[in-house]
Length: 431
Image (cartoon, rainbow, N blue to C red; front, side, top):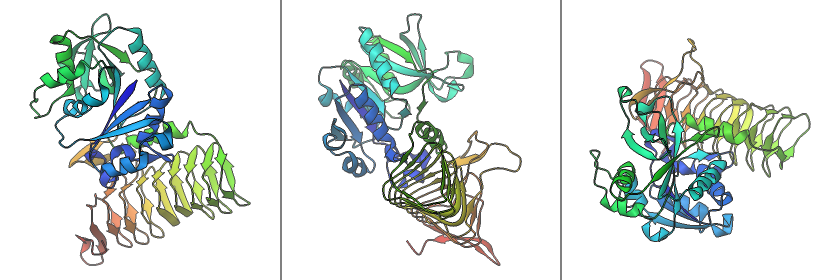
């Protein structure tokens, strides 16, 4: 069977993390999210994949290539020229699919790979035109909700229903299997009030106009995340790190304490006095210590330096440095970031309430009691800079010495504390 993966979006809600890469290429535990999906599909028996790409597509193309050389699975690409909705995006796959059923998935998902096997098995057991995976949610008003009839087939699709409609709590989980008949439904789909071609409309056309049946498959007891918000990366990180095995490929000096399942990559040097608690992942060509303290559920990329500092439950991309007397807790640090000596992230409010984060100009409750900073690529901080919980620092910005960051910092900004005038913000002259 073939598979189609939508990987063209920009991921605006994840900025500044996605300022330098497509959302499916966010790295966790040594691999981009999309690689976990491709490997899971391969394990389930998929032998050909079409990636619908767009935003910074060269990063995806260069990493995966033809698929055969790296992953022993054939990968092709289509560039999405316009962003006119999910039905429009899936329509690019028509010539690739031809006349056999195929699996479709959103490229920003991270799921337990067993879900792919279960989904394929259920589809093959039923002579139907489609299958949609579903997930139970606590706040159905924020999702597209699917109502099933007594036989388990899709009966109604309601986008973000009001609470008084009582249409259930089964949300679209973004994994589908369809007969090529779906492309006729896509051709009949008209633009919605959002001026987009909605795939939910295409499914309704398949049912109501083309007499197709779509069965619902409810995902239970398996990990699923659509990673639409920055803090959801921590959930993905925990899921992946809890599955790793202890692997020490680098050099570990004397008087180093390593507990639990820890991966240490090739040519990485862990210096004396360091203390590492698994599960955690440390990439290749990285320097740890001396006297570093790395706590559980930390993921560190390649070519990094974690010095006499403490890192806890954080994701640090490649080519970044946390070298001298730093504390990084519950934070995401993108590539090519350098923290000045004494720079620290706050991750807890005094009132112990959940941390709020500004997403696309709107404050959102993360629901997390502990949440640190989200630091974009190519950011530098001066000595003793401090970042309050839930704050974002945009790409290519510089934080001055002795500065307290208590608001989001825009990209390309020189942000510093003036002794007489308070916080100053200027265009970054160093970039």
